[in-house]
Image 1: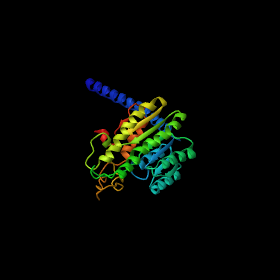
Image 2: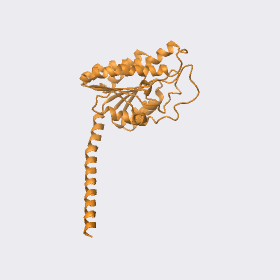
Image 3: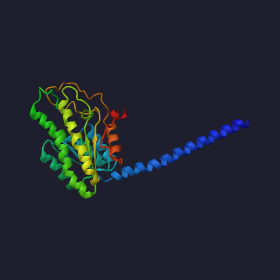
Image 4: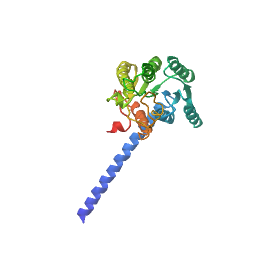
Length: 278
C-alpha cells in the first residue's frame, strides 16, 4: 500500500513538473510571437505579383501583421479587390499597375511607395511567369522578356530600394525563386529555370554585400504551388493542362517565408513549404 502511494505521489509530482514546464514555455513563446508581429506593424512592404497565388498570400499575411502594403501587378483587378478588402478591415494598401519588364514601370513602383508612405522596409520580389520551349525552339525575344520580368526586375527593384533602406537603418529584400534554381530543370523548363539560377547567383552575393548595412537578403525556393503559372505560361510548349492544379497551397510557403524573414540568421537560401520539410 505504501509502495502504491509513493508511486502515485511521484507520478503526480512528475505530471505537475511537466505542466509547469509547458506553462513556462508557452509564456515565454507568446510574447516573442507578439513581438514579431509588432516589429512588422506599420512597416511598408512592396509585394509584386499580388493578384494571384503566393503574392496574394504574402499580401494577406502582410496585412495581418499590420504592414502598409504596395501591391504590384500587371493584372491589377484582383489586387484592387484585395486592397479594398484590406482597407475595409482597417488596413492600409495601395495598388500599382506595372509591367515589370519595363524599367520605367519599376521606377514608378518605388516612386509610388515613397510618395504614399515615405519609406520602404520590405521588398518582396515575387512576380514572374514561365516561357516553355526547348532550346531549339527558343525565340530570343520571348526568352529575353522572361529574363526581364523574372530576373532583371528583381535586380532593378532591389538596387532602387538599397539607398532608401540604408538611410532608414536597414530593411529586408525577399526574392521568390524556385526549387528549379537548385535542381536540374525538366524538358521545356530550361529558360524558366535559368532565371531562377540567376537569382541565386546575384542575391547570394548581394546578401554578403548588404549585411553590414543591416539589409537582410533572402532567396525563397519553393516547389510547385497552386497558382496561375500554367494559365499565364507562354511559348511553343504550352499545353492546355493545368500542371499546377494539384500542387501545394501557396498559403503554406507564404507562412514559412514570413517566419524566416523574422529570424536573426545569415542563411540566404531556404525552401518554404513541403519541400523544406523533406
